Image (tube, rainbow, N blue to C red; front, side):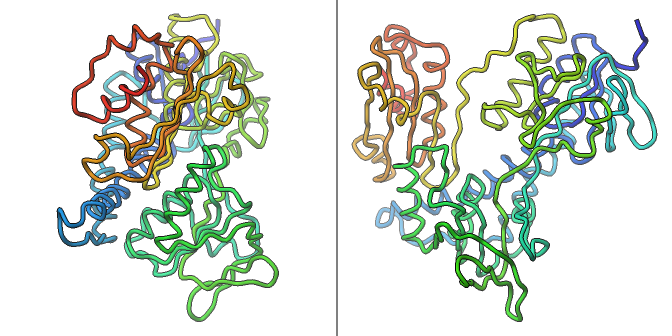
Amino acid sequence: MKNFDFDVIYLGGGHGSFDGAGPLAASGKKVAVIESGLWGGTCPNRGCNAKITLDEPVVLQREVERMQGIVNGQVKINWSELVAHKQEVIQKLPDQISGKLAAAGVKLIQGTGQLQDRHTIEVDGQQYTAEKIVIATGLRPNRLNVPGRELVHDSDDFMKLTELPARLAIIGSGYISLEFATMANAAGSQVTVFMHHDTALRSFYQPFVKQVLRDLEKRGVIFVKNAAVQAFVPTSNGLTVKFGKDQSKEVDWILDATGRIPNVEHLGLDAAGVKYTKKGITVDGFLRTNIDNIYASGDVIDKIQPKLTPTATFESYYLYQLFSGQTTQPISYPAIPSTVYTSPRIAKVGLSPTAAEQDTEKFEIVHNQIAADWYRQVDRQSAGESILVFDRQHHLLGATEFSEQAEDAINTLLPAVVFHYDQQQMWQLAHIFPSISASAWHKIR
């Protein structure tokens, strides 16, 4: 057997690697992680952690708005101070993540890695070999391929803006678009969202999505459906978005939020013979590529599961279990929850109301109005609804909620969906009262 430098090398230092690489090294395996940028990857540095920090004043602003009369005055967001605060929150994360990896025994290699063959990765002229290799290079922002594309910016650029543009154009209508439209609008920017189709957030329950859009429209956000964006042109006063049939809109700054694409280029995948598509690397049930010692983890995989941090974390930990001999079974994904951080939020897990509505004899669908819940009246929530999907034995199969605290409510219900609690088991959990958890759990018993 060949003597390799490492048992496992991970290419990429995000959640697709570090959640499993640390435990694997601590178990006695020789492990290395290669990262070309900030340790931790997208989520802690230019994704989830940064985004939720920027959103927090919006939550506060909305609550003060609802509580007017009980409290007096308005909350105005100081964007430059907010971005500085965001940086304070996230700036220590790369060192914390790399520190934990190093403490577990992981060899940290800073640089750009490229496969030379099935067992070798080269980083800045130095070659490293491993029995197994894991590709965990994630996603990057897509750029719309139209004239003037060099004039637009991505989500990372938006979250670094020290001054918010007075007139903001957002291209696309997915997670990033709607979340950043919410933030920018709340901070005083005139926001126009150019939609590729006539439907936003297509993976979410559309009646809830329409309520989010209506609320944003009332607050001044303009939605251009079926926009057919054609070009971006500089003008003396800013930038012009050309769209539709000879239509145009002048703005100060343009965010391209047309999706994210897998980082599969310049990795040496072809040299190693690894198969991939435009949606990512092809893997089997063990997260193994067509080259049997090369695996993939996280958002770079071509998969039907949502490309989210909890999915990547689950995959990374699964590979730790596989490589350390704790399992020989293929990966079995749990129900993966997701949310869009608009205000109110939309969150979901498990079977969707739309799917359940196709067979009402098999499923029981329960609608709950948020305003009817006394706990939501504490801070005067009036908009919102939750939809619970049960089988006929009263196992919770899915939950979808539109409310100010939807993500917390869905997280509370997650164990019932994942572990198929029956009604007796549901009664075994006594949540702190009063709390959002107690409010959400009460509705499934």
